[in-house]
Structure formats: C-alpha cells, structure tokens
Image (cartoon, rainbow, N blue to C red; front, side, top):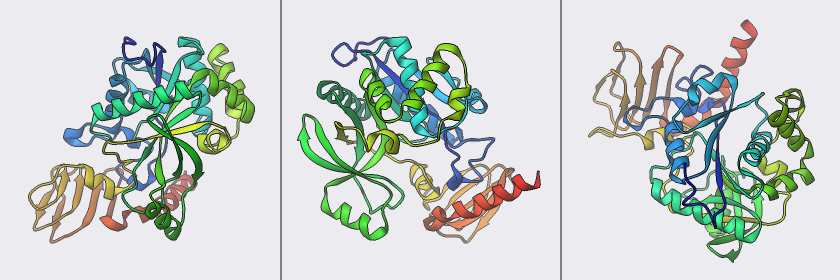
Amino acid sequence: MNDANSVNNVKIGVAILAGGSGTRLWPLSHPGMPKPFIPLGEIGSLYEEAVKRALALSPSVVFTVAAEKMLSFCEREGVEPLREPCARNTAPAVALACAYVKKKLGGDSVLIVLPADHSIPETEKFRERFLALARLARMRRGFGLIGIEPTFPATGYGYIEKGEEAGEGYRVRSFREKPDAETALKMVESGEFLWNSGMFAFPVDLLESEMRKFSPAYVDAAETYVETGDEKPYTLVKPDSIDYALMEKTGAVYVVKSDFRWSDVGNFKSLYELLPKDDCGNAVLGGATVENCRNCLIITDRKETIVREAEGMTVIELRSGSLCTPTEKSEAIKKAVEALMAEKKEAK
C-alpha cells in the first residue's frame, strides 16, 4: 500500500473491528455466522464493504481486530489479522489497535477505526469525509469522529452534541447515550445533534497518552500482548466501550458530519431497506416461492419455502432457525432471541 493520500505525510493505519453478536438479525446472524459476514446476494457482505472502504483511504496498513473464532471469516487480500485474546468491547480493542499501529508505523501516525458491520455504499464520499476528519484530528491535536445526520428520533443510537465550528467540522460539546423517545425527538428537532457512528480518527501518540490517563490498564494489557504475546493481562481487563472509557472524558474531540448514506444494519427493517427489491417491493434472498406479497423481506436456504398473501413481513427460514415478524417491529426480537440462546446454553 502507499501513503499518497496520507494526511500531511502522516501514515494512516486502519483497524476494522469485527465483533458483536447481531442478535437483532437472528437467525440470519448467529455464532456460526456473525453479522459482518452474512452473504447478502449481489451486495456481498458488510465486511467486504468495510474492507473496500478501508483500502480506499490509501493507508499504510489495514488490519482486522477479531477473536480467534472469527479470523477465518476475515481473510482478505491486503488485510492483516490481529487476533484479540478475548472479547472485551471496543475500548480494549482500540487500545490493542493503537499498540499495533504504533509498533508498525510509529507514534506519529493516525489510527482510523471502522466497524465491520456498517453499510456505506458511497465509497468516494466516505473517503473524502474521512480524510477531512483525519486532517482535523491531526491539525487540532484531538480525536475525530464521523457524525450522521439524524433522519428520525432513534432511541438505539448514541448522539453527539455539536459545539462551535472547527475547520471542516465542529468541536464536540457533549455525548448523549441512547435517549428515550421524547428526548430523542427534542434533540433531532433542535438540529444540534448527530448520531454517533462509531467511526474514529485518532492521532496515535495522543490516543496512547489519553488512554494512559483514563484507562491505563487497557494500554498496558495491549502493549504487553503486542510486544510479548502474553494474553493474560488482556483477559483480565474490564469490558467497556470506547465512548465511556475515553471519548466522554477526554478534552478535544471533533466531529465531521457525513454526506454519505449510512446504515448500521441493526435490524431487519434496515436490512430490508438496504437490499434490492422486485416490482412488488419484496427483497428476496434464496429460492422461496412468493405469491401475492408486498414489501416483504424473505430469506431462505430451502426451496420448500412458500410465502403467500403477506405484506410488510419479515420471513426467515434457515437451518439456524425460523422467524416471522412484522418488519416494522423486528427490533423487538432481541429479548426473545437472548432467552432462546440462554435456554440452549443451559441445555448443553
């Protein structure tokens, strides 16, 4: 890879975080088929999209942070594997990525962190916004993140409150975790808030020093593992998100507003919106017989699947399980899936 598009000749390392259980996409997503790697017909997979975006930034190195059981899914040309000793949420994973990039590129590099399971079809717009973010983070000696313009009062996302303008973005005034419906509506109507995308740009030396200040155990555990291969300190750290562990505590944080289409594909409604449709508004993957259906999401690995006279439904029939739910209410399956998984675990 070259660094022709590096920010002020600073080398860029891109970490793709491949974690998460994806319970809201069960039975499509399950332990044997994590959400980022689900085959989505002509779209490919969300992970493949993430790799294309990472390579579009012309970085010096691209690597995927993933647990042992997921590494086989992550193999792609131009992408290095970084095995995480165990899942500890995003804060330890970012510390691990920081230690890895520092060793490979030096402390004066920029670390970009991307989730593996988002959909952003407009790669060139993504590239332009992220290079702007990396410039802002480096010039202002702060951390940068991409904010998404809210399209509805979502209660499942974190929010960023914009402060004063700063170059190509804004200083972050505050972070707000997943709000109730009334609060979300007020924030969206104010025009002062963006969704937190979970996509970051970190000057590596600043990231290391700030994490040492607020979460030193993560830095020590990550550096020990990268330098010596000793996993034990990492397995003992407390799980935490990068937002709680660092972003809400540190000083200078900046946000650049996206101008590209974005989805975290967090439920079947968002998956339905992402997939191609037939003339009746149905998104169909697999060999189902579909008769007189409208605006349905139908996914099956069996030819013996028939769906008739349905509207606005999600119908999933796979070896891993079956699901039938109104697409608009598909977010609510999480509790039932978690109860089912717990029951299966107890039965073993």
